[in-house]
Length: 376
Ligand SMILES: Cc1cc2nc3c(=O)[nH]c(=O)nc-3n(C[C@H](O)[C@H](O)[C@H](O)COP(=O)(O)OP(=O)(O)OC[C@H]3O[C@@H](n4cnc5c(N)ncnc54)[C@H](O)[C@@H]3O)c2cc1C
Image (tube, rainbow, N blue to C red; front, side, top):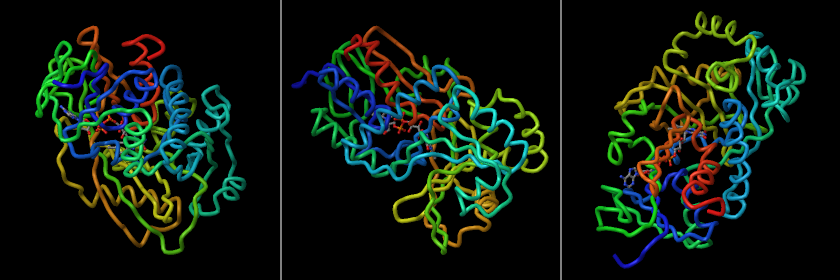
């Protein structure tokens, strides 16, 4: 054990990097340990949409706001391109328009605007289907997750002297010593950000939290008559799915209509989320199947549900599906974030939703302040 660190972070996904940043900014010597050769978990499979609208009011919404600020700063310093900003939630039905309009008038919707049909079409001429209006949220940021993660890791290494040990599996976190597949590492404190592996470390404790896993289908597609989206796009299904809309007037009427008209979409947890990359292709997601051991298969029938919803907005299905992938993430129907403190110097932090990257940096600040005091 040559080096001694103030903090060992288990996991080189976005949560691990966020904790490393918060500690390094407070002057701590940090090592990040990951069993893979590079990040290849949920953080590089995600849509890359850093969201604010739709988070539950209160703590989660404030976390998303704060994280968004840090994301913008990190992107600038780490050389991560922001592909586009803002999110349009398109109401295909009048039943979706009512809650979206109510949201725009609420505190959590400050900065958002609700546009009626004509204005909505003027803003997004790409929308060809019938729409009843749209909510425009200006705060969202979209990054290309696959390239953003390694860029942020390199920046942490170069600008903040964070040490990275890839291909290093952590087998136990003890008092001042982290046991790994490459031998022990000395660290005064540890934060475990192991994503949806909540069985290897502190498994018994995490089993008691009710955490499970969810699997999502994702696609990259291209339309022949290419167009540029001003921001990311979601649809009625998001109004039902996102916790920030759950309590708004009119959501029950929307649920009733979607249950009658799109039962398969609801069964497979389809929530249309479209974002665009610099080459014009679209990343389109996503489904949600909850299972403690998700299977690795990607049935076409679920991809079709996603593509059908896309066609409802853009008037047709894209001709080209360029790639497909699945991703799994930690999931809890009750708690978007699970934080455990097995002892005074150790924290386990799990983002348990399909929007975990959006609160990562605020969570990093909170955990590090709790471990080391306000200054990190
Ligand atoms: C398809 C999909 C789309 C999504 N879209 C979005 C989105 O648009 N916006 C958003 O905010 N969120 C999104 N999410 C959710 C988001 O991706 C996750 O909440 C977030 O990436 C979780 O980050 P993490 O660092 O905790 O996990 P991960 O990225 O999975 O990283 C965990 C890391 O820990 C390592 N590890 C685990 N155990 C050990 C061990 N014992 N020793 C060493 N290393 C270990 C793993 O190798 C892995 O690299 C999406 C998720 C998916 C799957």
